[in-house]
Each structure stands twice: as structure tokens, then as C-alpha cells.
Length: 449
Ligand SMILES: Nc1nc2c(ncn2[C@@H]2O[C@H](COP(=O)(O)OP(=O)(O)OP(=O)(O)O)[C@@H](O)[C@H]2O)c(=O)[nH]1
Ligand SMILES: [Mg+2]
View 1 (spheres, rainbow, N blue to C red):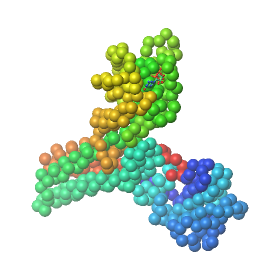
View 2: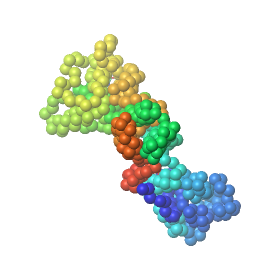
View 3: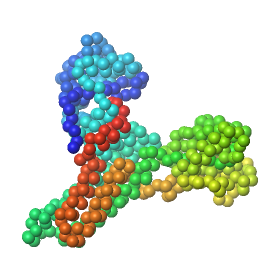
View 4: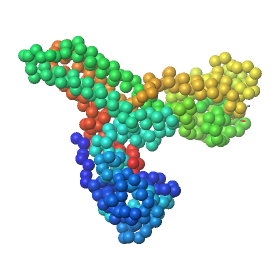
């Protein structure tokens, strides 16, 4: 069972240290009383209008002025982020002012919040469901606009609503089944078995639809790996720099310039990638280069997507992908230095890292490949994460199994399957979730959120 919220009042600095303004958050039953002791405004904090930002003086627990012009807002529960009484101070930034204010709050009786504890309280107090709480961390971690939009929809409750819809449908079917169990000899106004089966099928189809969004969810949340590989001196590092719009990797006319893998984050057509530039693949006497080549090979072999780059102005045959190359992901063949060529090479995507020619077509191809061969169903609504997908798979299994006892009118067994499926969905939304799962989820958060 879910633990109950304690009566403790917690506080934390919610903004990154060193900024111009620092926000401190206080939440819990004594939030207003403790904060009022550290605050002098035109009226006392307790008389201040709720949810109105007021200017005043922030004092230490011993009465010294910490910040002569600090903004303060009180948000009484239950209509606050955590569902409890919340007070926020916006004081001058800089680590000293923030730290002294935090120390004063602690001295006045608050406890330092754990990572994600404000959001955890919001969940435990029923302000948000567990998928929304997870989305708070997703919003903070989002590495691309698409990922941010996805997290935003989940935060707005879209996934939770669809799951609750499934739960309620199963609950309705269960009530039909239980009424048959309770009144076996009566012929009440029950829906027929075909309709029950149809409704089960609809639930299963909806679950399958959600499960198909898993890959998209993973792509958006985790980012895909994209390796740039190929022979030496073809312009791999130049391409990486061109993608990033800055000189991240060293470029030179000397073959074997890149000795070790170079990594960077990149968003291409809204898709987040972990980009790896690799050492040119060639035989070498030099031990360090050999190690670099080995490492490059394995990172390219492990990547979700590989750009195999060659120098289009050189002879092609010797630059083809080595036959013994065990690549896990999808490979796109790219011929660089198109500026030195008069005609395109059939079967190759022509680009020039030097002039930028052909990059739009390359980005289009990458986007198409991600969604057609790697990605699952593209959705503009929600995409489930691994935790949701695992539980959904179990729920779907139970819904499918329920068809057998339904045929033989084995109501008791049918009820067991339905309750199990509902239990799995409840774990996703947090209606019924184990404390250790909560701990794992909220440990992802930073302090102050
Ligand atoms: N003309 C032309 N030259 C290019 C282009 N891209 C790269 N070069 C040149 O090709 C040479 C090699 O570029 P790099 O980016 O270092 O090549 P690399 O594939 O990373 O090489 P290694 O790290 O040695 O494997 C440099 O002199 C670049 O200026 C291009 O599109 N056109
Ligand atoms: Mg290089």
C-alpha cells in the first residue's frame, strides 16, 4: 500500500544556485506559520491574500535581515502543487542568500525535502496520478521539442485518462461477472456473452495500441544512438561539426585524425540522438590507432543508426562497408565531398560537409528511417515508457486469458483475470503501487521538485 503523507513540513531551494533569482519552497501543515516568522510584509504573511505575490523583507531565524526585497506567495492547500499549504519565497539569487534562507527555514522547524518530495506529496495527496508525476521528471529531462511535447501531454494527464478509461471498462465487465456469481439462479438483465467478449476485445485492442507507442516513447525519452563511420579522411568529423553547427571534433587533411570516439548530443528533425564520431576504419601498425579503430567498430556496430560515410570524389569500391561488419542498426550510405563532384553517385546520399549541400535530404532520410524502420507507431497523443509497457503487457495477457473462462461461463476464474488486469493498470497510474516502485520513480528527481 502507498505510504501516508507525514505531518512534516519540508523545504528546499527549487532553482539552480547562482541565478539572479532564487525560489525556495515550503510545504506542509506548518508551512505558513513557519514562513510567517521569517517574513515582514505590508501585512503579516497569514493576512496576505492567498496566491498573491507580495513584496517584503526576509529575515533569518534570529531576526536579521537576509533580503530586504523578497517576494512571497502563500498557496493554502488543497489547491496547491502538493495539495498541502505551500509558501514560496523569491529572493535575490547568489548562493549565500539562498543558503542562509534555507538554514533559517530549517532552524525554524522545516525538514530538508528529499529529491522529488514535493511531487511525491502531490501524488500521495491525489493532485496528480503517477504517470503525471513521472512526466514532471520527463519535462525537466526533455532533450528535444518532441520529447517536451510528449512529456507535456502526459503531464496534462492524457495517458492517465486513457488508462483510467480501460480500468473503468474492466470494472464494468467485472460488475457484470460478479452479479452472475452473486445471483446464479436468477435471470437478471445481463448483457450477453458475445457483448462481454466484444468489450474485452476492445480493451485488448486499446492496450495493444498503447503498447505500440513504446518504441516512440523510448526514442523520445532516451534518444537513439547515431554513429558516423567510414574510412579515414572522408569528412566524418567535418560532418559531425556541420550537424552541431560548431567545431566539436578536430578536422585535418591527415588520415587518422580522429583517434578515439567523440560523442555529442544532437537533435535532428526533433529527434534526440546520441551522436558518435568514430576513427576512420583502416588497418594500422600503430597500437593506439588500432585500439581506436576497434572502439569505433564496436560503437558503430551497437548504434541504432549508422551513417556510413565515404569520400565521393575517390574510388568507391575500396570504401564500401567491410563484409565482416556486424552492424545491429540501420545503415545509411552517405557520399561526402559532393562539392568536388559533377554527378551524383547512384545509391548514395550526396552531401558536402564543406558547403552544407544535401544536408536537408540527409535529415529527411534519417527522419524517415527512424519512424519507418526503428520507431513503432507515431502518435501525437501519448507514448508509454518501459515501466508502463511492462505492466500493460501483463494486463493485456490477463485480458486475453479472460476469453477462455468467459466461453465456459467460469465466472470465478474470469473475475480473477479481470482483477489482475485492473491491478496492473492500477500500478501504472499509482492507484495501487508498491512503496519501492515509488522510491525508484522519485529518486530520478532533483531536490526542490
Ligand atoms: N572538399 C571537401 N572537403 C572536405 C569535406 N568534408 C571534409 N573535407 C576535408 O577532408 C579532410 C578530412 O576531414 P575530416 O573531417 O577530418 O575527416 P574524417 O573522416 O573525420 O577523418 P579521420 O578522423 O582521419 O577518419 C579535411 O581536410 C576536410 O577539410 C567536403 O565536404 N568537401
Ligand atoms: Mg575524424
